[in-house]
Length: 204
Ligand SMILES: [Mg+2]
Image (cartoon, rainbow, N blue to C red; front, side):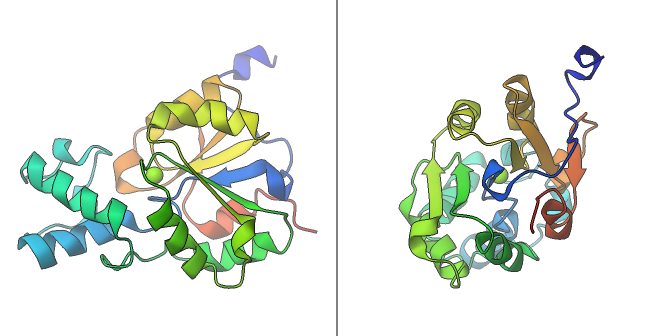
């Protein structure tokens, strides 16, 4: 019976607060929104809308040169404050609430550099002690499952479908945070808000 469910992770009950972890870009941070703002303000590309981003890999879905995409991404990686990176609705309040029930908050990102996004999270989560905010920057998507497994994480909220597949193959419950670039059919639990994420967690 269980074998038949191998590729569709089922959450029989809510997880403990220290058993969930989060991707940052596209889950906590409205990174694509910042991409669109930088494209307009710094590169004069003023016609982009988020619904046009139908693929995680921007060069596959946006009509702008790859070197421009890379230049904008470089800005997003190095200077979250300078690009006015904003949180996704509900993320700040939910994470601050979760912090009150947990010893630490864990974020695992494929970003290659950690400090700028750590500083941004610390600033965002002003009510959470800095030492509680654990950010791991892997530099590559495929490193996430092993790191999360080592931390005892049971479920991970992610907007990149291939990473969700890799997580599931490694026994970690993948939760897709719904975005225009991940709307393909998947067997994974899909959430559309932080309110739904919080319903996965035991908060007593
Ligand atoms: Mg992401």
